[in-house]
Length: 585
Image (cartoon, rainbow, N blue to C red; front, side, top):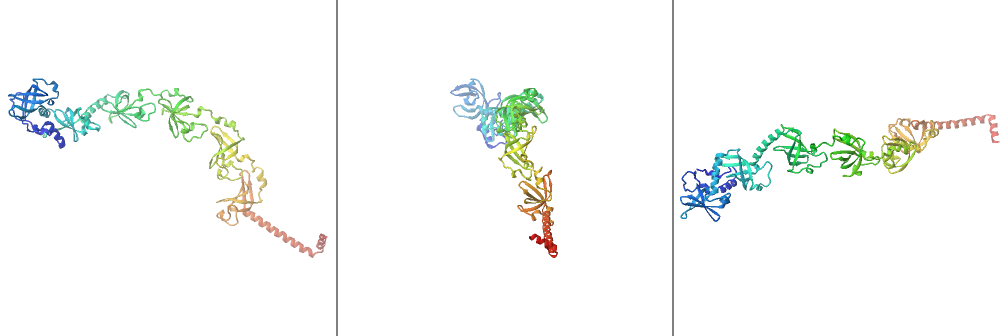
């Protein structure tokens, strides 16, 4: 006898799935109570499985002889391959209903097949066993698969990767394993995913055991990422990193590979414990760096293509897989380059000179300016020390001003070479950007590519003869305050010539801050204490000048008093009168 719980073929799946199975088995199967064997006397009871033969064909239907002068009719759709059915073929059918006077009975071959198959499956299959079937329908949560009886394939068990639209699987033959059998309710759930995982695990073990470093093996591109591609080697994926794809430059792995593309790769590393495999594509060919010193000897000149531009320089391709860097400092002898794109562009062909090779790091330093004549080689000849040059102030720094003598050739006017006499805190006090100036070449350093210029050297050094002659210690001179510092004040004695009035020489009284006694622009009489031509300094004193003035005033008073005393004494003596008389005459 058949247990009709079998129509609930999906166990604990939802009602929609159970309903679908029940419909597939046929409502008539609910009353089945007899399954006969071939050698048993057939009992014409509704629900019995009967044995019959194809007796004749009536239109599109087959007339089935069941014995005891009973016949039933089967539609062509009851057979999987109706064109192959022949008269006399034996068939098993389900007796659904015994009709009256006509002698015809209502029968179903498909429902009988399903019941027989269920019994066979329940006896022959267990959880984990493989099955094969055809996807017939999409139901809630998954698919219905006919393996002789309808069973449930959950959507999560269709494939290893998340499937797209599972209805695309309808009509396809699949292999799967039985995931769950509920004997009480006669429900079966299958999994295609688990079968694939089992197959891949077996294949993975076999592949891993057969791999060796250096081996060349075929694989299929399964996934592409920014950093590389995963290659299916047979049950296990290996990583082909972007750096191991080509000796040349690759922006993205998709530039070289496509999903499902079959390629040959070389095994670089194997970690059986972690099940990781590193693969290489470029390693199938010899590295272009093997004889790099011979092909691109230091000092040799080659044509290269600009393939990448960075802020610090440009990468130039000498050949596929061999690139060198032209640093921004190696692009021009004279041009001031803020960014390499001012000189080169992507894809441009340029002449380069090999400057240095690091084979281990696979790095080549290239130069563009070295292909041309270095203008600094003739600078010393063109601008010898002592010559006068004209130029434009290009830039001003704290320590001096850069003067462009010719395009790309600058000379430095150091702040100390701007004036013989004036103390200059910043070059902007004397010069302006863009101003035309004349200067004397002081020195040329060809190796460091530097020219030292002097502005003050355009005139004779006044500290040699003029200043010592005009300003001597002890003299009291006039001047005005130009700057005030915490240690004293600077007094301009004449345009461009300053002396230092130390705070201790301002007054007889103790002064904490010079600005308490003096202010910028104030005119003073100061006494020269010293003139140092070597240090180019003049020491001044305000208090000593006051002392001298006071002493001078006292001397005048003393002189006047002496004269007065002399006059009075003469009036008292005759000789003096005689003398006065003589004066009047």
